[in-house]
Length: 264
Image (tube, rainbow, N blue to C red; front, side, top):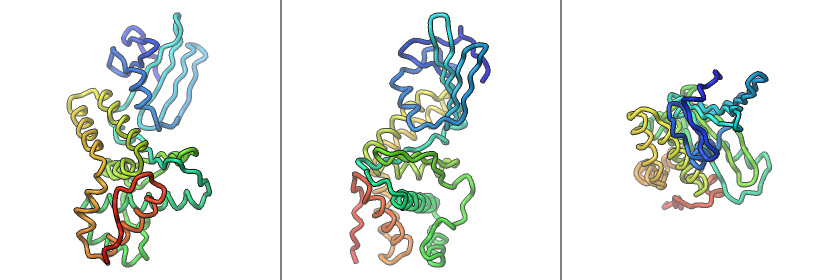
């Protein structure tokens, strides 16, 4: 990272400055913005004493050594707005067997693909694929940048950091994260609030504010189920698949957003 002009950005003990914004970002907002980010690179200069850390989501932090102590500079790349990791949290989780995490990750991936394809209006090819693939969606042909990836999985609450490179994919992923737990929803919404403050152009800020407004509607998954999935025949493979995978996630979730008791 290139050295920053110290005269162009103000620092204090309670504020983090970010690119092209002299007033800085309050420490509370900085915490929200960085939650869930994972370090991707680390650099230290023996000449200046500056320490640089790169994180997922196009974020970089430089700790700058100064005569009066240290300053911190947070920079972001607006084009990476959609690549921030999405937290998926299951509260009070104490089952750390690999088989359990594998089950969660599998159902997350299947539910993610269902939402992505349903939102795209690909019901017919989705239905045909489920009928010919023994109900497994992971082999459905989607673009590489739409594949769901995980960054990390942590103990305590089951805390997973997931991401995908596509805007549509992140929307589907956030729909799941918002619905699974109040903690996951809080983290996602808080990061969206910080993202809104970080945006530099009016267009980017308007886009971020629209995203935040959408996220504040926590029953998005409920709406998709009742308006697009439950209207399908009770034996439709798309409906059966969604209910099957949602029930797996619901077992680990603190919320029961959708009642999928079969009306058969």
